[in-house]
Amino acid sequence: MNNQQWSFTDLLTIAIPVFERKNYFAETLESALNQTIKCEIIVVDNCSSHDFFEKICKEKAVTYYRNETNIGLFPNQNRCYELAKTEYVKILDDDDILSPNYVEAFVKARELHPDIDVFFSNYVLLTSKGEFPHPYILPFGYMERGDKIIEYGIKMRLGFPYMTSIIRKSKSKLELDPNISTGGYDWLWVYSNAYKLSFYGEIEKNHKYRIHDCKASDKYKIFNLLTVPFIYDKIFPKIISDQKMLKTISKKSFWELIRIKSHANNGEIKKIINTDNRFGKYLKEKLDHNITIKTIFFLPRIFSQVAILLLRILNWFSRQWRRSML
Image (tube, rainbow, N blue to C red; front, top):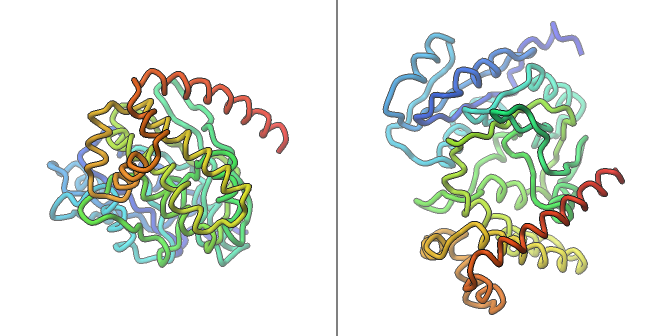
């Protein structure tokens, strides 16, 4: 491919949703602007109390939108998809960084496989102490259907890097609960639709996912953890018929619920099950109908924390063995 010919692509919009937090925005925006192949960029402000983002966008000649009210994290992502005018959209969190050839890698993949619905990149974790590898094992290359995405999610724990993805706009909208959009709706979208989407995984680490104390997802940590057993129990059984896989799913769901107990106190759990969204209703159902889970959730949290520590050690050895076999 001749980069002179592809100096700009009209296939893609990088959409950056923002709200209040200023710390990393300038660096994030620069990483989107400084691509080897340029594309449309928009910033969608979820009604911040200042004009910081608007001023920078004006200086950089970047299209800026501002919501009249704060509509919530995931509704603002949907707003990004709606405002983009291109065939594909990449949601870029305002604290993450793209490598300069991220868009180029997508254009090359799209040229080879025009049917791609989801392009995702390998990534690193960016912390105050440096860059570190992520803990997941991911499939790479072209996948006509997302069966391998589901397979890896079952065998090696859910870990699809939605935050690194470019998604075909016509298939991108997140299905949210009315008025309450806390929880992992991004993973829910991926694993609910994977079997009818085509994927391309870029093995190069073209995305830096920043870890810091002001991470928005930390506010909803328990809901995000709850998304994992929800997918195991409510999504996969609808699309998987293999009995061996279903048994594996059941075991993993159990341990993910224990993981939640190891993080949440009784007050947090009570608040979650009284929340009128699908994740809270799911946890309430598990506690009402599964005596084993109910008993474990009744016990002091230390029991679950020890169990999860042992499981984490076993999983670490298992991941090392699997990586050596790939």
